[in-house]
Length: 222
Image (cartoon, rainbow, N blue to C red; front, side, top):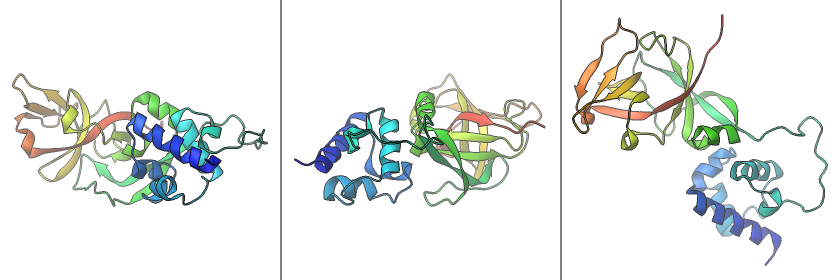
């Protein structure tokens, strides 16, 4: 069994053990969704690109040699020595809380924000399942302000709903609001932290599309 085949087997095992999938990991390294599957199942490409291998090794927390890296010492450029593996999280061209928007699979990104892959895993999210959205309006002040960037975990959806801040779609409008679970099983309220904005109480879950949970926010200081 050659080195490249060992790397494919090791990567496939890591994917299965961690509950990942080929398409998400392909997106993690900025490739087309079929890239990792083709590498593992068809041996195309024969070896992972050095940069791709580095990101995947850091993401899984394993040595690069496991994924086909050289066992010989490799000179690391001084400008990259010690730098963490970073992943690009898409910053979507829409705002949440004032206006109609969609979060379809082909939603175009207005840019990206780079994050340390290990920091994202520590945050409890999969890097390939988060996006950055801009907050529009002051309905969630002081928790969130107009223009803030929020990170939305799309894995944390209606199946895991609990008290917290979520991006959701209600009456066709994309918004960021606080979810407050009610005493009746399955019912909840959609709450604005700003007392000058309305709340919706005891909502039928069928009327709300949960996009994801807000797990991080960043803002500009003026």
